[in-house]
Image (cartoon, rainbow, N blue to C red):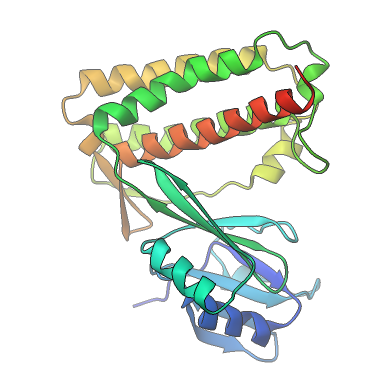
Length: 285
């Protein structure tokens, strides 16, 4: 059987050091390495691979990767869905792995942040249980939560940041809504053709920020789109009896149900809305 190609690429300074770090600390393993071209493939705990390459600007990585792949910025975050995070966290604390942080959102999920030797932040996310009615309520409430978070702000206020290097309120709004938009595509396929194969097409938030000009666009129409998009999905969930059970098979291996997709974007938006309030607090707005 043909080996699955990675859709995530990390550029690192020392290939062997990085492979050893992810093997010893996170429990992933490398099943392939090209010593001459200094590229390796890591297999993750969820069965998916990622590619690691030394910082050679002239090397064409495309033969080793999926046609569509993502590449985090230097010292940027990348997210992996996994299980058994708490035990990994306890083990890392026991061996004095300092650069780790566990954040738990009751009923939604927990995220373990691990900083690797190159400064990348590995964000391992594990879903926690939440009843279906509460998932839909969290998703529905996001509409009002976002609108409340920007009430009273003027156009200049949207460019405020909570700290140096962080996204502005304006950028945060466009990012959280774009995440809803990109997930809508998968939700609609699951609702209309439950069980079908679905090829994941990952998007890089930093490229979208640059490519669609987050920094200067006005937010009003996009806020309206957010409301209508979520109301549309909620209406479908009411009309289709087994809507939350419907699913797609992502990249031929991972089953994703509508309930999980809705829960993911609901929690994602909630987290960024909290950041908007933090920014307002910093600037007393």
